[in-house]
Length: 71
Image 1 (cartoon, rainbow, N blue to C red):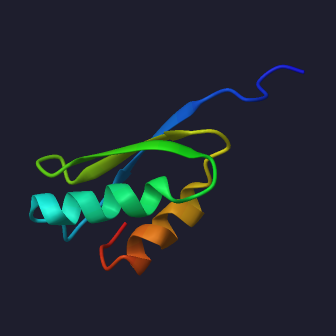
Image 2 (cartoon, rainbow, N blue to C red):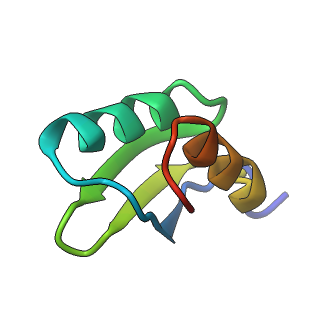
């Protein structure tokens, strides 16, 4: 079967982050989610790039929103 276990990358726009603490909160929150292997925030770009397997964009956005930011 092709594509099983393939890692993918997803970049999401995030509003409300203003400092390194905000970035760490979003990164750590996303890294706890099943299938997520990494998360890197760009404060300047107002975004987070998530890597992992079988990423669910809607779910990841809801996690970001639950952390107090707007995705």
